[in-house]
Length: 322
Length: 248
Image (cartoon, rainbow over all chains, first blue to last red; front, side, top):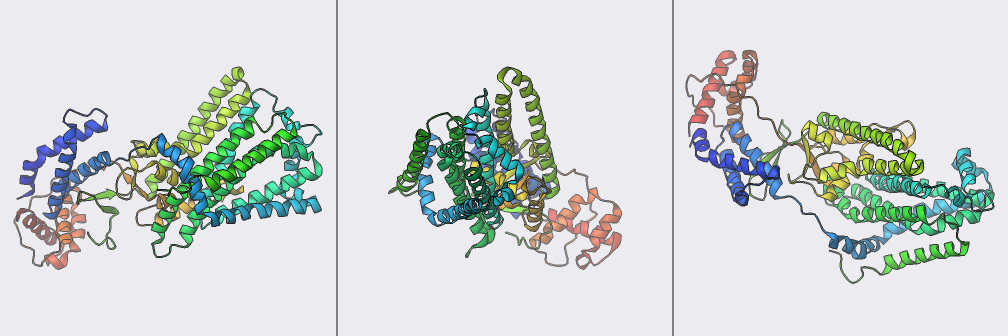
């Protein structure tokens, strides 16, 4: 059968399929849209035949395009509902963090060791704080935590400042989490850099406040959101390390395949980290700077740390994550 | 499936569940760069409009609230703009839509939300190294360009992790110019492999687009088959293509 005979015999079916696909693409499916899968499979058949018989490029190209368009319509992924969200929060996420406990301790160490080292160094010699924070950083720490009274609480009395700070924390802190994750694909180096950098910077700031400002106003401020934010950052670090390990140790897979699998594994971690840091922004924006007795704030902070401990240790046990 | 190692073009053969192969035309770094530039223009333009509107609204709501809203808009533009557009029915950001590109899975089907998250969050790593002020500096997209050029499917780091490729959404049909009519049908002197048959037929189909000199130049590559050079080679190749097409 020559190409023109073939086209003559089947051409009408193709233009009909073309019309159906266009209808669905423009969200105005015709009454015969139910026939689309059958017509699509016929067109697949025709394409295979046309290729086998080596018909000319235009005919094959037209069928190729038709099949691709049909395929895109028929194989669209379905959105998941609220049920999978609840399952993620209650089961999958804590189970995933537990499953990656080695990375959890590694990333925790990458943050906490520089943090503690920096605090000790600053306590010994305050020049270390100047080396890390630079004078501008020191000035802003003093502005927030310098006075005898809870200065940061006074700064927040202006109308709208709580909301503004909440938005700022979302933009800045969640963005940093995502960067920690993305840096992992550079063979873990980006993730390691950010975790250590944050440990050094936050450690220097805390050490400086301890020495030169009013420590209570600082520690009461950070107590409430510290668990969300620091654990969120560590989890983001785990996601990044997961990705980087996929690059560094492909095992018996090709490197591209290994990275793809590692990325899929890292997804729940980065979703969880983003969620935790967003919650931290809510607490930090609307709770942490309120003028309340120090004991209430420390108590709240300790409760939150205990809740996190409970969440990651207990939830989702017994049910194997799908 | 043909051996992809020796192919000259960038078409990706993909076998569907229906058992048939389709060819995806992968987009190269230039088109993707243009799309990226357009997206950055959109993002900055939108942000500027938002800033103007909010600074007017700020008179009524208080400037700090307006500033906060601006921060949130900035956050969503920089991290989620491309995610939601690419996970939508379009499968493309505004920039890609204009250039005519689309993000698909390596299997050719539309991408999932998770894949959109992965490939777009990792853009930050693709944008490295940053010029000037550390990580706050000017992105050069050197890593992304490097991996695009180093991979067969033109994938940047984000694409590799998410398992996605960027393809031409709709391939414009090639202009048809009637080839010079063949004088006779000539049986090829050698046994041809399927790819070679395709090449000979494609030569005839597309020869209408070329000048006479170009036709001769290309036909000369097939002198082992035609046994002639120059104009004679062209006409013999045409005749063979005619024979191959009309044989059945």
